Length: 442
Image (cartoon, rainbow, N blue to C red; front, side, top):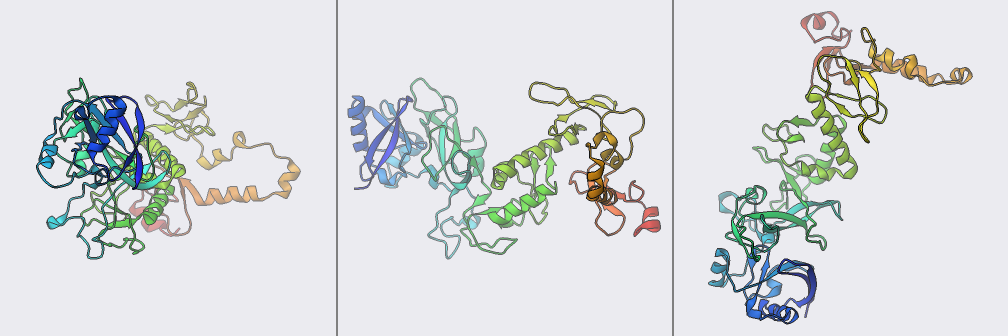
């Protein structure tokens, strides 16, 4: 007979492992636990994933995977509303990991939405931060919002993502002694490996099993899972193309800084009202790129607030200067700040008078390193490179971001999504009719 190990938390104390047989009834498991804890089996109640398991249920049919955590409380049965309904019917208890939170059209269920996918089972997907560091199938669990224990029995199961992501939507009854909690608090865990009770994962509700065999909008391949954008047309993308899309936009700093949602992206088709609301989806970038994403988002937030980023080498601290002064000091505070005093307008070491052109400052004497004259004669690339930079790069007159010109007309558009300032490469002022008529092409 197949056996497995589950972890039992008795009266909210520490967990201990118990070897069980998947063919056992819940009553048999109670008898084993009663003998170990020296209490009558009739006074033991087993709670798993928001439901009290009836004595007649079979362990293997309760979605109890190996290394699952079950909560055992002592006391006479006081079933929740849903458990009472189950006890009077022949239906098996529905696990939280089998609940479909995705709304179906025309009453269709997730199991029959596609002719060739009827055997597929919908999954929750999460980003596992502890071990996998990747997108994985997830499992939904619930605890009491008051005592934080998994001893709450639900009045009803969740029927939508709002039910599990928004607090206070579903009520229940906590069965822990002395706790009067009635509010359910849902969380997700990675289903790809055994987890500790404190191990949680980020829910990625836009990632779904491709039960309808829909092709990716970019590569047109049919794959699963995929990401479903929240636009009116419900565009889809495979995870590889979504990764490429995010990386490309990140490299070009084309993310959008939304006041409510943060640093995010719209559907690749640029659909209206399609900004990604849960930024944990950008975890698919991987740890290194996600760290860049967080840093760029912070920097963009500082810039939108009228701040500046310290130009000190290896610093980049976000600063919010007060008043109209051009003098900014990156104050040292603990491990933060480098002490540099610089000009707010040109981001060079602070100076009196007008700022010099940015490229002259970049290659000014104060920024040069000591070079042997003979070495300079043998190495002319530095000068040529400097000249290339001077000719092909200028700061945006509006936000000072460097803009490269590679052929084309003199009509420039700042590449930063939050700026998009249109200006003339020659005049370095806002693009106007005079520029268009006098020197559009030089």
